[in-house]
Image 1 (cartoon, helix red, strand yellow):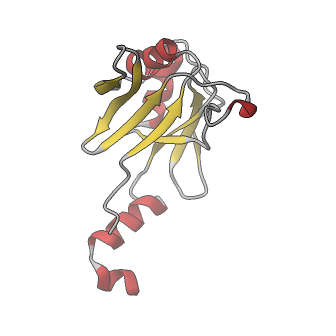
Image 2: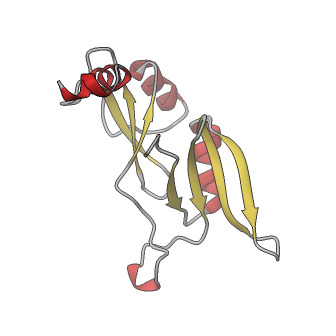
Length: 148
């Protein structure tokens, strides 16, 4: 049985710039890193919440012909408690959001930014009327509620 989302992995072109962005701009903390025998970083995990991480690999390239090291993924969505305040905070730090806070089709209040490698990051406030919150309530009620 799947119990949650463990991590999302990104491969960074500029490892240090990517770490600065996730740590200093988004406020995530380094959980741990794994290094090669020669001391080079193989991967690093950033803490989001209990059991939830962003995994960062160095050595990314935009050239898909160079093997499995192509930079990118569809997107990362990070939950926020107040989309407007987070939009303001990130803008004050010099991050340029793709646009204003909007309400998505699922009812979450959201906006988008990008990390140094161009990976899209959705920041979403999932209020009590969002489909996300309703699904969480339904699943919390147990299997019989899901069958209804």
